[in-house]
Picture 1 (cartoon, rainbow, N blue to C red):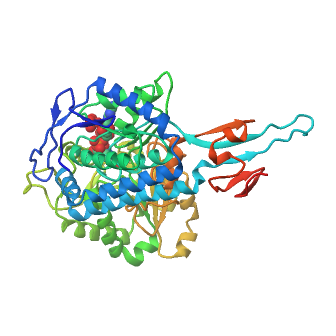
Picture 2 (tube, rainbow, N blue to C red; picture 1 turned 90 degrees about the vertical axis):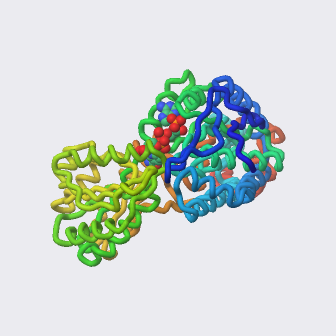
Length: 532
Ligand code: NAP
């Protein structure tokens, strides 16, 4: 499908009314075609009104209909073929393998939600039948079910042009829940966004969904996104990006006459503890694995390992030296855009400007490259400096990591306890016996992070029912939810209790005959049986 540079509003591809912008190929700085229109506030209003109308229809679709739509979304994305991967590569600098891998993940995610909703588990139906003879007062018939929240705004993420953007996890989970989605596309990859929106719209048409079930608006500033978050008909927001951006949207949403939830996934430095026996046993192997995790995707992952905690001894020196050696062989990597590249350079300088922080290793330099390239960096400091400098807890988005040399495991624990909320916390141990000696560190991590990793690295977020991708603030704005995995759907539903509603008028999930064959908790007992 050809790129038009238009917005998708209520099933129509419309020219943006407020000027244009272009994407750039970050690998060489070249301006890409076509130009993309910027939506006007009138176009924002039109999209919001259409989403509200679509919600009235879409929320009534059956689980089977929505499942078919989600499967079709994935099929239509695959049908875009190489054109999609090539667009991703041009707009992000990602290699083909990454573009195709992310496409597979995105489609897998859509298929996963398509299958998951058929089981109806997320509806969490609970029925307490009437007890008219109960003394001293009778109990009415009470039936609880989760239902769709309303139209959702999703902000495309710069670092996941497919898996966290137009058809990413936020969109897939909102659509699965029965919520129409308006995507505010990320201006770094508008062509990728348009292609995916074309695919989703085609899927909507083929499966009989309302035209405005998926819409796409573009902007290069904050006006469109801010207006969307403030629109009364919008009921929730999904976001992945900077702390600054996420908090700006969170504050806007909370200042509305009717506040709404913002599920923002923001910064994380993903601490990794290298326990002493692990380092003594395999410092060099750990260094190799660590450098792979740190520099993958030029470090542009929210789960990038930005902080290493270990006891200062000869084994740690071996690890640092081996890491520096491995890093020196890593060429400069292309970053997503010029802004993210300069933010990385500034962030790295802020760290090295702090007395007590030393650069001990680096990757290939960026001199030979004309685009937005980053040089990987390894820094060290001591625990006292880290504890005294909250600035060292800031995320430097890119291939930079700071090793904090600690005196003992108590100091490691003190640092974990001083950290802000994180997406992940990792422990590397020689064996289960060493782990068992440090259960307190696992417990400390469990209080600070969304995912505790043992003997791995944090990069690589499996999309599956048990995944938690979230964590205490500022990793996310709501630590009760995950943005990856089937549980992500919980962000976009709310419970409603139907009291004394006649059987024929109840949602299908709650009717006596159990027509959807769901497992329901009836008078306290899980059962698929109909109610006599
Ligand atoms: P961003 O600046 O937070 O922007 C993400 C999206 O939110 C963009 O669509 C942006 O619109 C919009 N936005 C930002 N601030 C806004 C505001 N005040 N009002 C309304 N909309 C707003 O993130 P980014 O562009 O992806 O990258 C910038 C930095 O974010 C990176 O250098 C990195 O530090 C961080 N980041 C972190 C993660 C992570 O997973 N932890 C992922 C990506 C980026 P416009 O672009 O149109 O302004």
